[in-house]
Amino acid sequence: MATQPTIRPVQSKADRKAFIDLPFRLYADDPQWVPPLKSEVAGQIDPKKNGWFSHAEVQLMLAERDGRVVGRISAHLDTLALTMPAEQGFGPGTGFWGMFEAEDAVTAAALIEAAEAWLRDKGMTRAVGPVSLSVWEEPGLLVKGHEQSPTVLMGHHRAEYQGWVEAAGYQPAKQLVTYELDITQSFPPIVNRIIQSGEKNDRIRIRKVDKSRFDEEAAVILGILNDAWSDNWGFVPLTQPEIDDVGKKLKPIVFEDLIRIAELDGQPVAFMITLPDMNEAIKPLNGSLLPFGWAKLLLWLRKPKVRTMRVPLMGVVKRLQSSRMASQLAFMMIEYIRRDAVAHYGASRGEIGWILDDNQGMIAIADAIQSRINRVYQVYQRTL
Image (cartoon, rainbow, N blue to C red; front, side):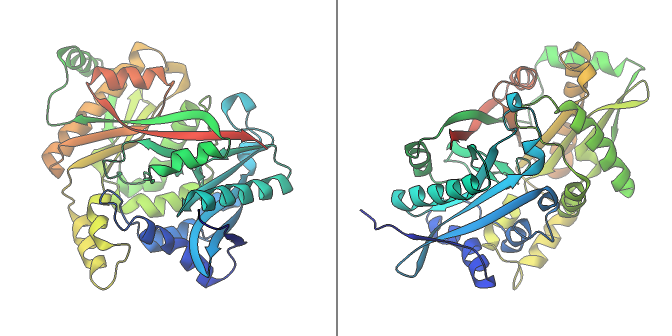
């Protein structure tokens, strides 16, 4: 059995580099892992570059054995999550850990214990994890779907982690699922009839976003999102600093024909965001834009050709949810984006998610367009 590691806080530039570099060794033999751009990870953990830090406190930690880094973890508080109703998953006393990587079970146990100790010192009574770092970034531990590479902005974890986390006393809190489908095929006749009916309805308009008005369009989408998702498990409202930073990060892969806003009687009531799977382009770069990775990525961004499109976010305003209109608007947006994804980007596969495992509305839509669950992420919890 491996000896007990030493757990210490990340303090120096060298520590941050070690924190970022560790997964490159742990996943070196995993053909499905996508090496993230190290500059992007550095930005994620930098309070100056991640607007989420405006309402969060974080302690990054490293595990070392015999002078060698063998694990990492974050322990963190989200002050907005602390104000949410407990019945929605977070609330008072809830802290988090995430960015979890470990070489062995002994290291995993020591890291989780250290994160819990930090949370207790901050007055927390419950730990939820992994959440890395924000619930809007990479929540949950991959427990199904290890045989596929993750799509853009999705996590990938070693299969052993599930047993190690559960051995630390953690119980399931919520599952997040993704669905995949063949987007080269037309949808079932009943779905197409619903779409055609919507096209005859003068009250409905499905429009592309206008990238020249990026900030205005982002504000429209944020307004719908914060209303549509406000009752969901794990909801924490997105703040303006987060929107600003996410906008900078995603603007290069925002294409007008892949994002739709639905209007009813002239008012925006729903949206769908689709992103070309940038992981297909960055996987060969092994985490670095140097010496020529930046040129390859820039060329790809000008006119991306991808196999997969990911739908990370959809939303319909609360007043329309569970109505026939909500499903109709969703089907119309999905179909219009499907057509353009195939025609303009050469895509053949779509991935929708993540979706809460009890979100009956979205599950019904996913089932209706004949998609299937391809990945499952588990969020765990434990009383401290």
